[in-house]
Image (cartoon, rainbow, N blue to C red; front, side, top):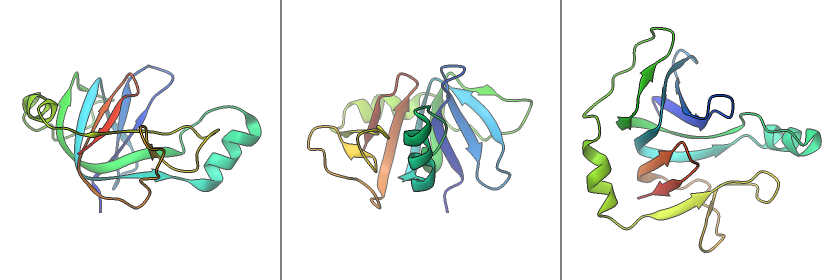
Length: 137
């Protein structure tokens, strides 16, 4: 089971990092790399977003924290932040797959280039930026 889930926080413009055990947000960051990662879309949440035409958290990436940039603890909660910034450079040298999610257009996260769903796929790494860029490796 994944240790953390990460989603874009539309209120503060950062990524929120939630501990899967405690169900509490433990940090915010600018960028994060998750290992043994996968994407999740809550279907009932997606349908609610479509009905209300307003976004709220119902989709995220789950995995283990490998690297974080611009990390800020939230409410003094502890989070183990490994080798800050070390994996970012290594991943930039690899060719990844850009993925995206839009609840109004797709039921799942998809490959940006092909439009193919990545639901159920496990990735070695997923790199997420607060700008919305998501790349799977």
